[in-house]
Image (cartoon, rainbow, N blue to C red):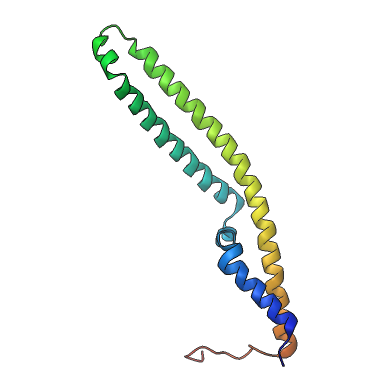
Length: 141
């Protein structure tokens, strides 16, 4: 006999695994510090690449002015300002992404808890009916 409630739980779990929360479930094994650290590192790396690419474009755009005034420019001021802006952008990015990913981690843990509750419900169904207890692997081990 088909248990309709069990089928609904199984369908919900399958949808969670395949569509709804695929990414959240795969990231559920991370500790909070590791999760935040990996995402913050990625965000800072991305802002670093973007900043230096934009800086290179600015230098190329101003190449005529730079070459005409090559001896008059204050390179110490330009480099100091450029690095100061970079560190400011990197710090802001790190702080904002730390805040964002800690909120996202908390949200993901709620999703994982609901997913695990569904799995526990399914285990109870199997324990009550005695199904799926035997080993169904090909080797039978």
